[in-house]
Image 1 (cartoon, rainbow, N blue to C red):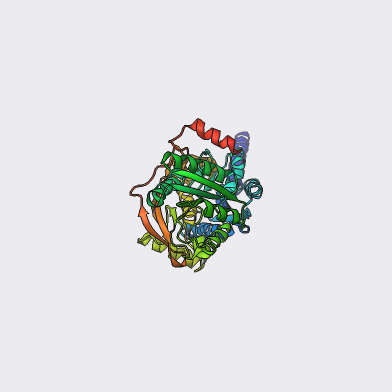
Image 2 (image 1 turned 45 degrees about the horizontal axis):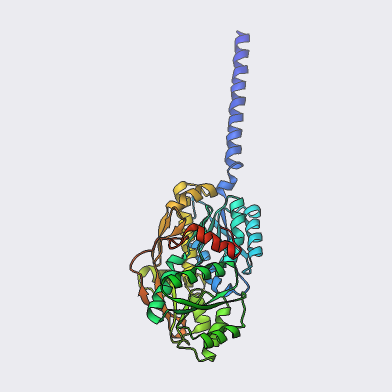
Length: 415
């Protein structure tokens, strides 16, 4: 009898020991293993806080901060706060790539947003792809690119530059002069525009490119005086727009039709102020659009980030990128980069200008197009709207992929 009770005691003790180990393991699992799953979700933002494109990118930073603020005010994601880590690209590709590397490997961010200038996107792309990470890119760009690790929320040429140039040539004439900011992206877009202008029965009289932040536009003014174009198409970015607009006024060319594709509300209000009589731009979003969704967005943006903040297409594209990312996180129930990247191509969200939906094959958005004239004070007033959303075509279909690959090779950029 004593022996039986001893064995029972041993068995009971063993069972208690096993139970204690199980409970200890469960406690360790709950307190140690998923700490990262209960901590904040960290995302990265790369934009120019300084340099020639800082003024235009400031509105994108403001929109990103608003998006994170609103997500957290609604309870965060999966019960976790979202934290934003901001890095200064200075508008420089090498600085942007180094920032992306720090954010991914050091800060352990689950997604990246921004990059602004095309040279920054081009430099960050191989970093993002090497780490199998995820970037949301909000700017208008030259197209001829796709990546399984980037969501392009800004317009492709067929959603902005090409229909806008077609509209302008029909209205003002087909003798065209092109100006841009020096770089592979602008050269690629220039080659695309030159092709398109000729196919539409126009003539490209010439083209010149300013260095980033460059202000010497003397050669451009001399060309305009000599060649007498009927239309000037500008893809100039950043502070160089001020020098260009000033020179046109000084030269008495205020009546020369100018289509600016690289300047939105922040640049127009700061530099142009309605001094040019026939100055136009083209974007999927305008600050002046009617509707409660847009009015509410502008009010929330300024209440959060300051009365002087200008809403712009790149700013709204930044905000939309955060909304798409958040929708994917909620749907998959995880902030893991690979899971979100696979899901985000199926997402659509409401936006200040209507709605935003990812086209899954290209990882770009369906977009609208509004052509606007610059009015006194730099306000953009719509003069024409395409009646439908435009499907993205990063590789324009009026030439073969082989042709565009050759174009990229010619300007020193591989697809």
